[in-house]
Image (tube, rainbow, N blue to C red; front, side, top):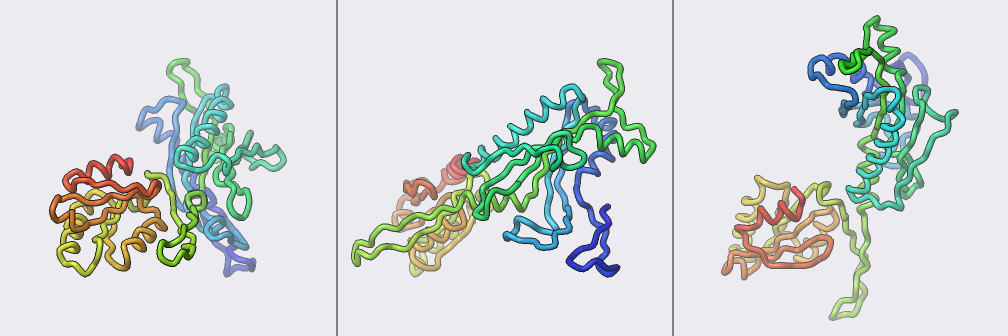
Length: 319
């Protein structure tokens, strides 16, 4: 636990014991994991949990917080292979962001010089994202050497050496750590997905439409996969059918039902929250049992059968 003063005034009233990082629990349980799961080095242990920092001036929305969610992985390796694993996980973590839609030009790797590294780090690379407020760290990749297990072993008088059955040797594994603040990467994904679409001119007044916002989150990250919309709300038969479609999809996906306002405004509301697909129930639906499916990113519309909807959404939403 970390003994710290929370806030700008250091006195007994602000003295608090908080967890500064989540990784120490992994080190304490290292032998338990090895003995109970019979894992062989190299292997990793990942977890997520609360962590705390004594930030005097939190800021930039959810970028800098006193209490945040930390997710990380501790990768245990032979000392001779630690550098190779460090390079491997550095590249793999960068690929993870790119694969989930972060633009390449908004990411960079920054090698931290020795005098600026954490005291336990033999090597440290930060993955930085270009926020509207500048380049900032969103993840750290560290070669922690054998610092942690050696110190836990020393102070607990518990032998934390790993026994390699293949060589008959016992050694303290070196650790490659990847550590992420969940709120920070959430903010990065939101910033990167936010897109403004310039409006055209209306057919009647020739006035320029206002700029429209679209949250182009990766399909796997979009919280709402589909929205069901009756074409108009004053036709009970359309509303009834739309609610039937909504009930059909609800057990399978996180979806919404919306009948308020014009169909165009409802499309835009869903675009703003990153909904992948809008499903419009119209008068043809009542005759043919199909509806209009509109894609968030392409704006393309197509008619699909209601009985095929679940499979179509699974495919398009990468569910």
